[in-house]
Length: 259
Image (cartoon, rainbow, N blue to C red):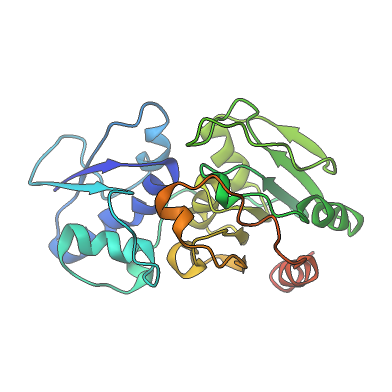
């Protein structure tokens, strides 16, 4: 099969578990075709179910072409789109097939997301200050030149952190391989965390967590009642009035780490 993928970084990461599930179903490996420039080898270079040369029928995954089913885990729906089969979420869970060497007490935080409605939790800076006071080290990972889907530059939310990096995608993946915990919005790096098995906090904005959270998600914040903005690209910030959930997030981190 030739899998032709269109979409964001997060959409590509979501698809990384599909070749393994397809191989289990058919015994055939998958060739990946994508029009996204740069960085693609990061997603697929370690995947044992990938062909080096195209072969087979072309199946397309065109994201955002129609409203998503908000009650189905996205990789399950994606696999149904290309195969016609419904599988358990564990069979299609994203996987970068890369190991981890987590550093004790290292939290990686990113406050960017491709859609403005998926970022802006007003208590994030306070949460990071509280974690620092609790003895965590915090890597603030962001790219100040990153423009979202509306052509906007997201505002910097953090003033409290141990150190900051502005990574390439590959460097971002390598940083998350060292993370004990990741905190971020519904974005590409949240999908990377899930595909690496990093325990992570998902701040999901308008999309219900059941749609995008992966097995290693230890806490999902979703207080927005808005659904239209995800479909119609509304630039409104759906998280700006979210209640403070920092204590719940801190408790979830402590329960799921050796800190």
